[in-house]
Image (tube, rainbow, N blue to C red):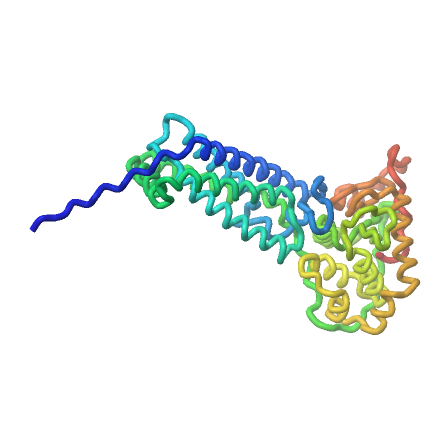
Length: 407
Protein backbone atom coordinates (compact mmCIF):
# COMPACT_ATOMS: atom_id res chain seq x y z
CA UNK A 1 0.00 0.00 0.00
CA UNK A 2 1.52 3.29 -1.11
CA UNK A 3 1.02 6.41 1.00
CA UNK A 4 0.41 9.66 -0.85
CA UNK A 5 2.79 12.36 0.27
CA UNK A 6 1.14 15.52 1.65
CA UNK A 7 1.72 18.50 -0.58
CA UNK A 8 3.84 21.12 1.18
CA UNK A 9 2.03 24.24 2.29
CA UNK A 10 2.48 27.08 -0.16
CA UNK A 11 4.64 29.77 1.41
CA UNK A 12 3.01 33.06 2.17
CA UNK A 13 3.87 35.77 -0.28
CA UNK A 14 6.02 38.70 0.70
CA UNK A 15 3.71 41.60 1.59
CA UNK A 16 3.96 44.95 -0.16
CA UNK A 17 6.38 47.17 1.73
CA UNK A 18 3.92 50.06 1.63
CA UNK A 19 1.35 47.93 3.49
CA UNK A 20 3.83 47.37 6.33
CA UNK A 21 4.67 51.07 6.37
CA UNK A 22 1.00 51.93 6.75
CA UNK A 23 0.68 49.33 9.51
CA UNK A 24 3.66 50.88 11.32
CA UNK A 25 2.22 54.38 10.99
CA UNK A 26 -1.20 53.27 12.28
CA UNK A 27 0.36 51.44 15.23
CA UNK A 28 2.45 54.48 16.16
CA UNK A 29 -0.61 56.75 15.93
CA UNK A 30 -2.56 54.39 18.17
CA UNK A 31 0.38 54.22 20.57
CA UNK A 32 0.56 58.02 20.79
CA UNK A 33 -3.18 58.30 21.44
CA UNK A 34 -3.03 55.57 24.10
CA UNK A 35 -0.11 57.22 25.88
CA UNK A 36 -1.98 60.53 26.02
CA UNK A 37 -5.09 58.75 27.31
CA UNK A 38 -3.04 57.19 30.14
CA UNK A 39 -2.12 60.76 31.14
CA UNK A 40 -5.74 61.93 30.83
CA UNK A 41 -6.92 59.02 32.98
CA UNK A 42 -4.55 59.93 35.79
CA UNK A 43 -5.30 63.65 35.58
CA UNK A 44 -9.07 63.11 35.46
CA UNK A 45 -9.01 61.13 38.69
CA UNK A 46 -6.98 63.86 40.37
CA UNK A 47 -9.43 66.57 39.29
CA UNK A 48 -7.41 68.10 36.43
CA UNK A 49 -9.52 68.84 33.33
CA UNK A 50 -8.17 67.99 29.88
CA UNK A 51 -8.55 70.23 26.82
CA UNK A 52 -10.89 67.67 25.21
CA UNK A 53 -13.50 68.22 27.91
CA UNK A 54 -15.63 70.06 25.33
CA UNK A 55 -19.21 69.23 26.29
CA UNK A 56 -21.32 66.49 27.83
CA UNK A 57 -21.27 64.67 24.46
CA UNK A 58 -17.52 65.00 23.77
CA UNK A 59 -15.81 64.65 27.11
CA UNK A 60 -12.59 62.64 27.55
CA UNK A 61 -12.67 63.24 31.30
CA UNK A 62 -16.14 61.78 31.73
CA UNK A 63 -15.08 58.65 29.84
CA UNK A 64 -11.83 58.43 31.82
CA UNK A 65 -13.63 58.60 35.18
CA UNK A 66 -16.26 56.00 34.25
CA UNK A 67 -15.92 52.49 35.75
CA UNK A 68 -15.51 51.14 32.19
CA UNK A 69 -12.13 52.85 31.79
CA UNK A 70 -10.40 50.14 33.85
CA UNK A 71 -10.06 46.43 32.99
CA UNK A 72 -8.37 43.92 35.33
CA UNK A 73 -7.12 46.75 37.52
CA UNK A 74 -5.39 48.59 34.66
CA UNK A 75 -6.70 51.53 32.58
CA UNK A 76 -7.91 50.51 29.13
CA UNK A 77 -5.49 53.08 27.70
CA UNK A 78 -2.54 51.23 29.26
CA UNK A 79 -3.66 48.02 27.57
CA UNK A 80 -3.77 50.03 24.36
CA UNK A 81 -0.15 51.09 24.91
CA UNK A 82 0.90 47.42 25.14
CA UNK A 83 -1.13 46.33 22.10
CA UNK A 84 -0.14 49.18 19.79
CA UNK A 85 3.46 48.99 21.01
CA UNK A 86 3.63 45.29 20.11
CA UNK A 87 2.04 45.96 16.70
CA UNK A 88 4.55 48.74 16.01
CA UNK A 89 7.46 46.45 16.88
CA UNK A 90 6.12 43.74 14.57
CA UNK A 91 5.53 46.13 11.67
CA UNK A 92 8.96 47.65 12.10
CA UNK A 93 10.51 44.16 12.21
CA UNK A 94 8.80 43.31 8.94
CA UNK A 95 10.47 46.28 7.28
CA UNK A 96 13.95 45.01 8.16
CA UNK A 97 16.05 42.33 6.50
CA UNK A 98 16.00 40.20 9.68
CA UNK A 99 12.39 38.99 9.37
CA UNK A 100 11.81 35.29 10.08
CA UNK A 101 10.45 34.56 6.59
CA UNK A 102 9.45 36.46 3.48
CA UNK A 103 5.91 37.31 4.67
CA UNK A 104 6.80 37.98 8.31
CA UNK A 105 4.85 39.28 10.26
CA UNK A 106 1.79 40.01 8.11
CA UNK A 107 -0.27 37.20 9.65
CA UNK A 108 0.32 38.37 13.21
CA UNK A 109 -0.39 41.96 12.22
CA UNK A 110 -3.70 40.82 10.76
CA UNK A 111 -4.59 39.19 14.10
CA UNK A 112 -3.60 42.36 15.96
CA UNK A 113 -5.74 44.42 13.60
CA UNK A 114 -8.77 42.16 14.10
CA UNK A 115 -8.39 42.33 17.87
CA UNK A 116 -7.92 46.11 17.87
CA UNK A 117 -11.02 46.70 15.73
CA UNK A 118 -13.13 44.32 17.84
CA UNK A 119 -12.01 46.06 21.04
CA UNK A 120 -12.66 49.47 19.52
CA UNK A 121 -16.19 48.44 18.54
CA UNK A 122 -16.93 47.36 22.13
CA UNK A 123 -15.55 50.62 23.55
CA UNK A 124 -17.53 52.68 21.04
CA UNK A 125 -20.71 50.86 22.06
CA UNK A 126 -20.01 51.54 25.76
CA UNK A 127 -19.29 55.22 25.04
CA UNK A 128 -22.55 55.74 23.15
CA UNK A 129 -25.03 53.57 25.03
CA UNK A 130 -23.60 53.27 28.55
CA UNK A 131 -21.46 56.32 29.36
CA UNK A 132 -23.25 58.73 27.00
CA UNK A 133 -20.07 60.61 26.07
CA UNK A 134 -17.34 60.30 23.46
CA UNK A 135 -13.61 60.73 23.92
CA UNK A 136 -11.84 62.37 20.98
CA UNK A 137 -8.52 60.63 21.62
CA UNK A 138 -10.32 57.30 22.02
CA UNK A 139 -11.78 57.90 18.56
CA UNK A 140 -8.26 58.55 17.21
CA UNK A 141 -7.18 55.24 18.72
CA UNK A 142 -10.15 53.44 17.16
CA UNK A 143 -9.38 55.00 13.77
CA UNK A 144 -5.80 53.78 14.08
CA UNK A 145 -7.14 50.26 14.69
CA UNK A 146 -9.19 50.39 11.46
CA UNK A 147 -6.19 51.62 9.46
CA UNK A 148 -4.01 48.91 11.03
CA UNK A 149 -6.48 46.22 10.02
CA UNK A 150 -6.74 47.64 6.49
CA UNK A 151 -2.95 47.73 6.11
CA UNK A 152 -2.65 44.19 7.48
CA UNK A 153 -5.30 43.00 5.02
CA UNK A 154 -3.34 44.56 2.16
CA UNK A 155 -0.27 42.70 3.45
CA UNK A 156 -1.92 39.24 3.55
CA UNK A 157 -4.36 39.33 0.65
CA UNK A 158 -1.81 37.96 -1.84
CA UNK A 159 -1.47 34.61 -0.09
CA UNK A 160 -4.57 34.83 2.12
CA UNK A 161 -4.89 35.43 5.87
CA UNK A 162 -4.77 31.72 6.70
CA UNK A 163 -1.49 31.13 4.90
CA UNK A 164 0.10 34.25 6.39
CA UNK A 165 -0.99 33.39 9.93
CA UNK A 166 0.15 29.78 9.48
CA UNK A 167 3.56 30.87 8.19
CA UNK A 168 4.07 33.21 11.15
CA UNK A 169 3.06 30.56 13.69
CA UNK A 170 5.28 27.97 12.00
CA UNK A 171 8.22 30.36 12.17
CA UNK A 172 7.62 30.85 15.89
CA UNK A 173 7.22 27.12 16.63
CA UNK A 174 10.51 26.44 14.83
CA UNK A 175 12.23 28.57 17.48
CA UNK A 176 10.78 27.23 20.77
CA UNK A 177 13.39 28.76 23.07
CA UNK A 178 13.10 32.29 21.70
CA UNK A 179 9.30 32.09 21.33
CA UNK A 180 8.85 30.64 24.82
CA UNK A 181 11.09 33.33 26.28
CA UNK A 182 9.07 36.04 24.55
CA UNK A 183 5.81 34.57 25.88
CA UNK A 184 7.16 34.38 29.42
CA UNK A 185 8.46 37.96 29.22
CA UNK A 186 5.09 39.16 27.91
CA UNK A 187 3.18 37.38 30.67
CA UNK A 188 5.57 38.78 33.27
CA UNK A 189 5.02 42.28 31.90
CA UNK A 190 1.23 41.85 32.04
CA UNK A 191 1.40 40.38 35.54
CA UNK A 192 3.56 43.23 36.76
CA UNK A 193 1.21 45.78 35.21
CA UNK A 194 -1.86 44.20 36.82
CA UNK A 195 -0.17 43.82 40.20
CA UNK A 196 1.74 47.07 40.43
CA UNK A 197 -0.42 49.67 38.65
CA UNK A 198 -1.45 52.30 41.26
CA UNK A 199 -5.19 52.16 41.98
CA UNK A 200 -5.63 55.94 42.17
CA UNK A 201 -9.22 55.64 40.96
CA UNK A 202 -10.28 53.66 44.05
CA UNK A 203 -12.25 55.93 46.35
CA UNK A 204 -13.73 55.18 49.72
CA UNK A 205 -17.43 54.39 49.29
CA UNK A 206 -19.90 56.33 51.42
CA UNK A 207 -22.67 54.52 53.25
CA UNK A 208 -25.36 53.33 50.83
CA UNK A 209 -28.42 55.61 50.64
CA UNK A 210 -31.70 54.17 51.85
CA UNK A 211 -33.30 51.76 49.38
CA UNK A 212 -36.88 52.73 50.04
CA UNK A 213 -39.10 55.50 51.33
CA UNK A 214 -38.46 56.83 54.79
CA UNK A 215 -39.94 59.66 56.75
CA UNK A 216 -38.24 63.06 56.67
CA UNK A 217 -35.65 63.61 59.37
CA UNK A 218 -34.37 66.85 60.81
CA UNK A 219 -30.93 67.97 59.61
CA UNK A 220 -28.07 67.02 61.92
CA UNK A 221 -26.90 70.11 63.85
CA UNK A 222 -23.41 71.14 62.78
CA UNK A 223 -20.55 70.23 65.10
CA UNK A 224 -18.94 73.35 66.50
CA UNK A 225 -15.26 73.64 65.67
CA UNK A 226 -12.68 74.76 68.15
CA UNK A 227 -11.67 77.14 65.35
CA UNK A 228 -14.85 78.06 63.39
CA UNK A 229 -12.82 80.05 60.85
CA UNK A 230 -11.39 76.76 59.62
CA UNK A 231 -14.70 75.58 58.19
CA UNK A 232 -14.78 74.87 54.44
CA UNK A 233 -17.05 76.03 51.62
CA UNK A 234 -17.55 73.68 48.66
CA UNK A 235 -18.76 74.71 45.18
CA UNK A 236 -19.79 71.75 43.05
CA UNK A 237 -21.84 70.50 40.09
CA UNK A 238 -23.84 67.26 40.11
CA UNK A 239 -22.92 66.38 36.51
CA UNK A 240 -19.19 66.94 37.04
CA UNK A 241 -17.33 63.58 37.17
CA UNK A 242 -14.56 65.13 39.28
CA UNK A 243 -17.19 66.26 41.77
CA UNK A 244 -18.54 62.70 42.03
CA UNK A 245 -15.06 61.43 42.92
CA UNK A 246 -14.49 64.33 45.32
CA UNK A 247 -17.84 63.62 46.97
CA UNK A 248 -16.72 60.11 47.92
CA UNK A 249 -13.39 61.41 49.20
CA UNK A 250 -15.12 64.13 51.20
CA UNK A 251 -17.47 61.66 52.90
CA UNK A 252 -14.51 59.47 53.79
CA UNK A 253 -12.61 62.47 55.20
CA UNK A 254 -15.57 63.71 57.23
CA UNK A 255 -16.18 60.23 58.66
CA UNK A 256 -12.68 60.43 60.16
CA UNK A 257 -12.98 64.14 61.12
CA UNK A 258 -16.58 64.82 62.21
CA UNK A 259 -15.43 68.14 63.72
CA UNK A 260 -14.91 69.62 60.24
CA UNK A 261 -17.86 71.60 58.94
CA UNK A 262 -18.44 71.91 55.19
CA UNK A 263 -20.91 74.36 53.65
CA UNK A 264 -22.10 73.10 50.26
CA UNK A 265 -23.01 75.55 47.52
CA UNK A 266 -24.10 74.97 43.95
CA UNK A 267 -22.18 76.09 40.87
CA UNK A 268 -23.78 74.21 37.94
CA UNK A 269 -21.89 74.54 34.65
CA UNK A 270 -25.16 74.92 32.79
CA UNK A 271 -26.13 77.85 30.60
CA UNK A 272 -29.78 77.61 31.58
CA UNK A 273 -29.14 79.11 35.04
CA UNK A 274 -25.48 80.15 35.09
CA UNK A 275 -24.86 83.20 32.92
CA UNK A 276 -21.09 82.76 33.28
CA UNK A 277 -21.20 79.53 31.25
CA UNK A 278 -20.87 80.29 27.53
CA UNK A 279 -21.08 76.78 26.04
CA UNK A 280 -22.94 73.57 26.78
CA UNK A 281 -21.02 71.60 29.40
CA UNK A 282 -23.48 70.01 31.83
CA UNK A 283 -26.93 70.58 30.30
CA UNK A 284 -28.99 69.21 33.22
CA UNK A 285 -26.90 70.52 36.13
CA UNK A 286 -29.28 73.36 37.03
CA UNK A 287 -32.24 71.02 37.46
CA UNK A 288 -30.13 68.66 39.59
CA UNK A 289 -29.05 71.56 41.81
CA UNK A 290 -32.70 72.54 42.28
CA UNK A 291 -33.49 68.93 43.23
CA UNK A 292 -30.81 69.09 45.94
CA UNK A 293 -32.19 72.41 47.24
CA UNK A 294 -35.69 70.92 47.40
CA UNK A 295 -34.42 67.78 49.16
CA UNK A 296 -32.70 70.05 51.69
CA UNK A 297 -36.02 71.82 52.28
CA UNK A 298 -37.41 68.46 53.45
CA UNK A 299 -34.36 67.62 55.55
CA UNK A 300 -32.90 65.02 53.16
CA UNK A 301 -29.97 66.77 51.49
CA UNK A 302 -27.38 64.17 52.44
CA UNK A 303 -29.35 61.29 50.89
CA UNK A 304 -30.12 63.28 47.72
CA UNK A 305 -26.46 64.37 47.53
CA UNK A 306 -25.38 60.72 47.43
CA UNK A 307 -27.99 59.74 44.84
CA UNK A 308 -27.36 62.66 42.49
CA UNK A 309 -23.64 61.92 42.24
CA UNK A 310 -24.24 58.17 41.91
CA UNK A 311 -26.80 58.86 39.15
CA UNK A 312 -24.35 60.38 36.63
CA UNK A 313 -24.37 57.27 34.43
CA UNK A 314 -27.97 56.06 34.88
CA UNK A 315 -29.52 59.55 34.65
CA UNK A 316 -32.71 58.56 36.47
CA UNK A 317 -35.30 61.38 36.76
CA UNK A 318 -34.97 63.48 39.90
CA UNK A 319 -38.57 62.60 40.75
CA UNK A 320 -37.54 58.93 41.02
CA UNK A 321 -34.65 59.85 43.29
CA UNK A 322 -36.97 61.93 45.46
CA UNK A 323 -39.37 59.00 45.77
CA UNK A 324 -36.49 56.68 46.71
CA UNK A 325 -35.54 58.77 49.73
CA UNK A 326 -39.14 59.36 50.77
CA UNK A 327 -39.72 63.01 49.88
CA UNK A 328 -43.25 64.35 49.65
CA UNK A 329 -43.77 64.23 45.85
CA UNK A 330 -46.20 67.14 45.57
CA UNK A 331 -44.07 69.38 47.76
CA UNK A 332 -40.93 68.37 45.89
CA UNK A 333 -42.47 69.07 42.47
CA UNK A 334 -43.76 72.45 43.56
CA UNK A 335 -40.36 73.33 45.01
CA UNK A 336 -38.54 72.59 41.70
CA UNK A 337 -40.35 75.47 40.01
CA UNK A 338 -40.62 77.82 43.00
CA UNK A 339 -39.15 81.31 42.84
CA UNK A 340 -37.50 80.78 46.23
CA UNK A 341 -35.59 77.77 44.86
CA UNK A 342 -34.29 79.80 41.92
CA UNK A 343 -33.30 82.66 44.22
CA UNK A 344 -31.32 80.27 46.40
CA UNK A 345 -29.59 78.77 43.34
CA UNK A 346 -28.72 82.20 41.94
CA UNK A 347 -27.36 83.27 45.34
CA UNK A 348 -24.99 80.28 45.32
CA UNK A 349 -23.88 81.04 41.76
CA UNK A 350 -23.31 84.70 42.66
CA UNK A 351 -21.20 83.63 45.65
CA UNK A 352 -19.10 81.41 43.39
CA UNK A 353 -18.56 84.18 40.86
CA UNK A 354 -17.63 86.64 43.58
CA UNK A 355 -15.09 84.12 44.89
CA UNK A 356 -13.75 83.73 41.30
CA UNK A 357 -14.48 80.00 41.14
CA UNK A 358 -13.17 78.68 37.83
CA UNK A 359 -13.81 74.93 38.09
CA UNK A 360 -15.65 72.33 40.12
CA UNK A 361 -15.16 71.05 42.72
CA UNK A 362 -13.54 74.03 44.47
CA UNK A 363 -13.05 74.40 48.22
CA UNK A 364 -12.28 77.52 50.23
CA UNK A 365 -10.67 77.18 53.64
CA UNK A 366 -9.79 80.37 55.49
CA UNK A 367 -9.82 82.37 52.26
CA UNK A 368 -7.51 79.93 50.44
CA UNK A 369 -8.74 78.13 47.32
CA UNK A 370 -8.25 74.40 46.78
CA UNK A 371 -9.41 72.71 43.57
CA UNK A 372 -10.23 69.06 42.94
CA UNK A 373 -9.53 67.53 46.36
CA UNK A 374 -10.73 68.25 49.88
CA UNK A 375 -7.70 69.59 51.81
CA UNK A 376 -8.26 67.66 55.03
CA UNK A 377 -4.58 68.05 55.94
CA UNK A 378 -4.98 71.80 56.55
CA UNK A 379 -7.39 71.22 59.43
CA UNK A 380 -5.78 70.97 62.82
CA UNK A 381 -6.71 68.05 65.03
CA UNK A 382 -9.13 68.70 67.90
CA UNK A 383 -7.22 69.95 70.94
CA UNK A 384 -4.18 71.01 68.92
CA UNK A 385 -2.91 74.60 69.39
CA UNK A 386 -4.80 77.07 67.22
CA UNK A 387 -2.78 78.50 64.33
CA UNK A 388 -1.68 82.10 64.65
CA UNK A 389 -4.09 84.43 62.84
CA UNK A 390 -2.79 86.14 59.77
CA UNK A 391 -3.90 87.69 56.49
CA UNK A 392 -5.03 85.51 53.61
CA UNK A 393 -2.33 84.82 51.01
CA UNK A 394 -2.04 87.47 48.31
CA UNK A 395 -4.32 86.79 45.37
CA UNK A 396 -6.62 84.37 47.19
CA UNK A 397 -10.35 84.95 47.07
CA UNK A 398 -12.08 85.24 50.45
CA UNK A 399 -14.42 82.35 51.17
CA UNK A 400 -18.06 83.27 51.53
CA UNK A 401 -19.02 83.16 55.24
CA UNK A 402 -20.51 79.81 56.33
CA UNK A 403 -24.23 79.89 56.93
CA UNK A 404 -25.94 77.99 59.76
CA UNK A 405 -26.09 74.30 58.98
CA UNK A 406 -24.58 72.41 56.07
CA UNK A 407 -25.79 73.52 52.67
